[in-house]
Image (tube, rainbow, N blue to C red; front, top):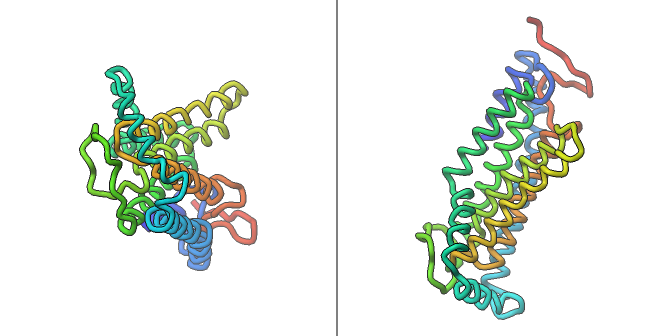
Length: 259
């Protein structure tokens, strides 16, 4: 909700989505709010419902159904395969997806994008995707109380449920979001392709969280859904030409405020 409030405030003052909004345009702001409700709040609410439904299905209905019956075996096998070098690499990936690191990278990237591209669109998209996945993750853990794997934990266990993985969904939202932005703004083909290498980070984080005994395989898979859908929703709402527009847009035309 705080993201929507920020959108509304900025839309009335700066050319956030490529338009300069006319001040005092109450109908325009009302239309902006309706668009935000349809394109952001409603889809994210549906995603939350899906995540909770998946969590209940995994923890209450299908606990004795394959492949969920072999999840503990996967975690125990990863525990047996631990080595000093792999553990060091896993610590690096896990740290990259920690809350302080995610916030720091997201804020730094948003600042660089704003200064480089001279507009707010990409910065808001990235921050909105990261915030949305965090909201869905947190609310899902309040409903789904899944114990963490029965193996030795290499990290201190946070108070939230094992389902879904907050580290993984945050990494997906941030680094997939950055890849989408770079793919859109890059002028060279090789750079567009190289942008997708950023997805190595969330993939590494997912493996890391299982390796370190913090999550079941289904926890991290569900997190890819959470982070990926949040990026898709925000891309359609903010980056798309048919996405949300500020209060200066009316019937497909752009009006500008007088200086």
